[in-house]
Image (cartoon, rainbow, N blue to C red; front, side, top):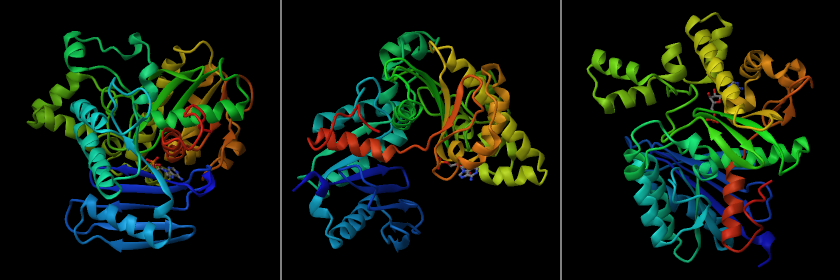
Length: 407
Ligand code: AMP
C-alpha cells in the first residue's frame, strides 16, 4: 500500500461522548467524522456521522462507548476504509510529568496513564475507556496516545511550581501542568509559518478560547507559561468554569451554601464562568446576541471574560524575550469578532490597534491578521488538533514525518 492509501483514525473519548475523525496519512482533509453523544446517560444516546456535506444520525440503543465504537467501525468497514486504517491516535487529557511527547500505547503506557489519573480522574478514565475499546476491536493496529499536557512540559519550574508546601509536589505531583497543548502546538507552528517568523527566535501568546479557555506563551517553539493549572479550572473565564478565584472566596461560598470541597469544586466547574456571571448561558454566541439586546448579565459576562483574558495576555508576555503576536483560536477566538475587538481595546499598551474590516472577515475557519500594523501583531488562526494527533500517530507508526513538523 502506498502512503496515500493509509488512513488514520483519531479518537477523542470523553465521559459521555466519543468523537472520531478518519484522515488520510498524506495530510489531506478528513474523509469521515462523527460524534456519539449522551453515552452512559438516560438511553437517548446517538451517533451523528458526517461525510462531506451530508450528516446522518444513528440511535445507540445500549448507549455505551463500546457500542459507539462498534457502530463507527461498522461504517468504516462498509465503506471499505477499515482495511486501510494503519494506526489509531487517541487524545489523552493528562500525561502528568511522565509524558512530554506522544507515545505508542503498550500495557506499560496504559499503567502509566492510570498512574497519573489521580490528577484528572474523570478525563483520563474516559480516555482509557476509548483506548481499551479500540485495542479490543482492532488488536493488530498500533495505537498512539497524544497528551493535552505534553506541549507544556517545557515550562520552567518558576512557572509550574505552586507556592504551597513542596511535599505536595514531591509526593503527589501537585503543580501547574496546562492543557490545550495539542492546539497550542498546532497554532504556534502555523503562526511561525504565516507570519514568516524565525522558528528559533520568536515570541507568541496564543489564546485558545472555546468552552474551555486558556492562554499560553510560546518562545522559539517551546511553551514557557500557561494559564491552566493542575486541572483545567485555573486561569481564564470559561463557559461554566470560574477560572482564577481567591481560595478564601471559595471557602466562604462553601460555608454559605453548605457545600463540602467536592461541592464547591463542582460549582466552580459547572455553574460558574460565563454562565454564572450572565445567569443566562455558557455560550458566547448566545451572550453576544443577548448583550446586543441590552441584557445586563450577558454584557457583564463578556466584560469579565475580556478583562481576564487581556490581563493574562499581559502577564504571559513577561515570560517572552519579545512579543511578536497575540493569536486567537478556538470556537470563540476563531469566530467572535466582538470578543477580539474588546480584547485588543484592552491591549493598547502593546500598540495593538484593531483593523475593523480584517477582524470581521476572519471568521468561520479563515486565518488573518486583524491589527493595523503599529507594533505587536494580532492574528486569528483556526486550530486543528486532529491534524496533530494524526501526524504524531502516523509518525509513531512509522508512516510519516517527525512529530515536530505539524503544519
Ligand atoms: P469550542 O469549545 O472551541 O467548540 O467553542 C465553543 C464556543 O465558541 C461557544 O461559546 C460558542 O458560542 C463560541 N462560538 C462559536 N461560534 C461563534 C460565533 N460565531 N460567535 C461567537 N461565539 C461563537
